Amino acid sequence: MLEGKTALVTGGARGIGRETALLFAAEGARVAVSDLNADGVAETVGMINAAGGQALSIGCDVTVAAEVDAMVKAAVTAFGRLDCAFNNAGIAPYQIGAAGKLTADWPEDAVDRMLDVNLKSVWLCMRAELRQMTQQGGGGSIVNTASIAGLNGLPTSSLYVAAKHGVVGLTKTAAIEYAKDDIRVNSVCPGYIETDMTKDTMARRGDQILAQVPAKRMGKPREIAEMVCWLASDRASFVTGANYNVDGGFVAA
Ligand code: NAI
Image (cartoon, rainbow, N blue to C red; front, side, top):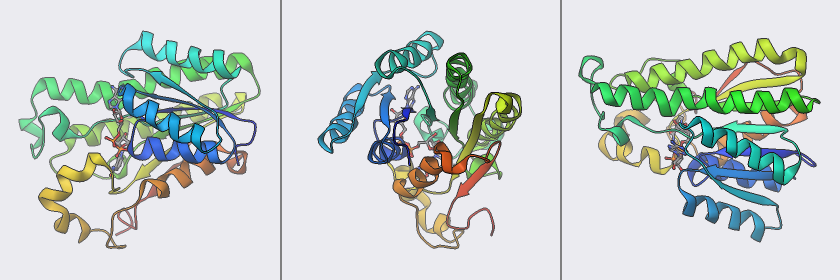
């Protein structure tokens, strides 16, 4: 599906990002895998290379503009151009001391951090990618990781929800602006997926959550990767500005 393409994945050290980097490579792309966690990203690249793919590891904190610009530059230096980008790095409320907090109880520093990591970073990545894609010509495909929290409200996750709604808004607007350049911009909205990110939440209230999922199970990272891979590929050539939920029916219920 991605034969001859070059791709960039953020948050590729584990979870949805790792699985998507592996699938991109299996479908023929050369993949630049990026994350804050250098060991994890090296492991992902090792897995791709061991399977006969071609990958490059890039350490990057997606909240730092200069690092994001350097990340895109490193990918282009290695592969010559950038065709596909998956902006996926993100954090959950419990990782910044905001687990279980109602809207009025979020610490202000957690609010800033959440918006930095889960929203501004997506804009920083898109800025660098869009500049590269418009300059090189020939179009491109950007996929952002939003969430079911980008479509619905979720109690005690208010800034996570706000950031992910923001990602959906960025996606739609950039899609309109860059359609003339043949650059497609879409987002994927995962439901509850089995990754390190959800372990804590599922341990605390997994039964209550699964009761709200028509499929009565969590999703697997590969099930998100499949959607991202399709959106990144030319098979989705008329799809832009769209947000696809992959959620076992959560949003429909
Ligand atoms: P994860 O915690 O397993 O992986 C996230 C990765 O992002 C980690 O490798 C982490 O090091 C990296 N990261 C965090 N902050 C970073 C930064 N400042 N710079 C660079 N890398 C950074 O999480 P998972 O589940 O794979 O989530 C990936 C994306 O999917 C996130 O955006 C998350 O919000 C979203 N998502 C996840 C869902 C789930 O149920 N697991 C549901 C809906 C959305």
